[in-house]
Image (cartoon, rainbow, N blue to C red; front, side, top):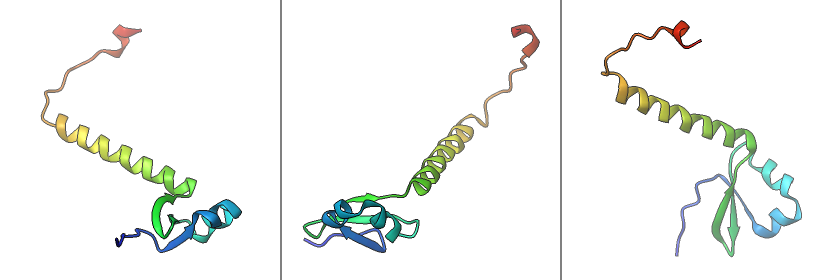
Length: 83
């Protein structure tokens, strides 16, 4: 059965076991598809890219929240009264 590999670089599980950092570095900062018996098993994502992905997802959630609340009435709050 054919599979779509969403990465320009791929490596086998055996290659990953032999030298994990070389496998990560082979992607030049992009994900590396890890294959098990020539089938994609998972993607090895560098830490910096993973952090950027999480930040982007968080930003999307905030945009959604702002869009939901944009028509709500404003409420005046005196912050000094809470001190």
